[in-house]
Length: 543
Image 1 (cartoon, rainbow, N blue to C red):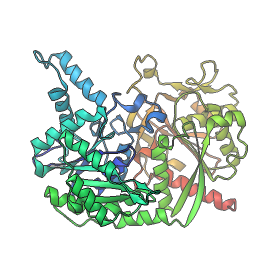
Image 2 (tube, rainbow, N blue to C red; image 1 turned 180 degrees about the vertical axis):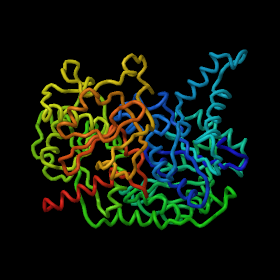
Image 3 (cartoon, rainbow, N blue to C red; image 1 turned 180 degrees about the horizontal axis):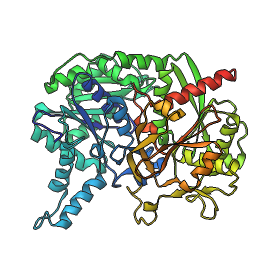
Image 4 (tube, rainbow, N blue to C red; image 1 turned 135 degrees about the horizontal axis):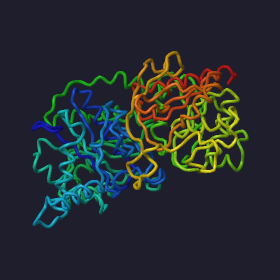
């Protein structure tokens, strides 16, 4: 089990407004505890009724983060993995939909015969069970951090908060700690910070029965001791537990800010944990490289959800990791694939040294992406295609190199004579769309002496997937005759996982999502090498 009698629980809630950064705060606290020698995991409780975000539009929810075991989860799990360098599982994300679905199945099965099924105790018991069993069931955790989505005052989150109140009583004060992340706004007209929103947010939390032990006060700039004293007094929180969480240039500074504010020491003293001095040397070096790069390179991301950058959160962070490895700032140029279809490519890519086409679903913007692939291939610009991006590369190659003029994917057209991308056989007759794609980690065998195998430095890799369509193996031989090599194959299904061009400086496509496995101190090898190729291209072109 994940929990022992010595396991401690840290609950993190948010107040005043959303998007204050509870996920980053949770991940940062997890890092500070892990660097003190503790075994840590993080659970995200999401109040929405969807079973998971898999059927939500990226514009509604941002990126869907996929775990090794195939769970479609909240994007905050990506922050958890990147910061604490631990793989999450489906047990690290629970939604209202999952909780109610589980209780309803038990009721139908007869588990509650003779009882009226109610929010208390049945829903709250199910929530507590998910908290007790967070993470991997074969690991005993010292600390389980629980982030509650939404904002205090939301109706949707009330069952989660009630479950936390109960668990704090059951586990005991010495084993539980409540952190409330709140906003302390600065009113420029009055030239002062305002504490009333924080006071009201804490008041709502206390009405529910939860007294915060620590306040993380999100603010634009430094707040004085007098203001902290005021907040602590009115919120019944010790002044030294009122923490300044000021705005920073990069999210990776947050752990350093928290450590400087004494967050780590406060937590271990309050919970009776060992207080080994954390070694933040490598993290500080990484932050220094991010904030003080020696050079810059511009890479274009040609996608269909570019109006909401959180749709590509893991890709953005992967470029930060890879850029730091080269002491380089990767400037991302966002190109809307759909607009390219009506306005043409024009000068959209004249100032870039690399092009990435990310994953996505549906027909919108596809022809713009295919035209972008052609430009990258013909001009020798480093190209990286991920999931749908690889499929677009194959369609373009089939049309313009192999002479299959009507080549397409069956997702986009059922009239093509050359369905070079086709739906997986086991996907054809599915009635439900949620949770039924090819999801999670799969093995891939790389061909020796290829660019991809050299980048990885391994013959066998494991990467995470999220898709329904695959390369049609009928056409693979024809592709290889013309210079596009299938460099990675799934050993069980014989499906193509990676491709590359033999006569191009750097042209790689992958069916999986490598961005999901990039870490702060271990950038993904494909992103790291792609940035290197972009720098080489930039140097050769005199930029």
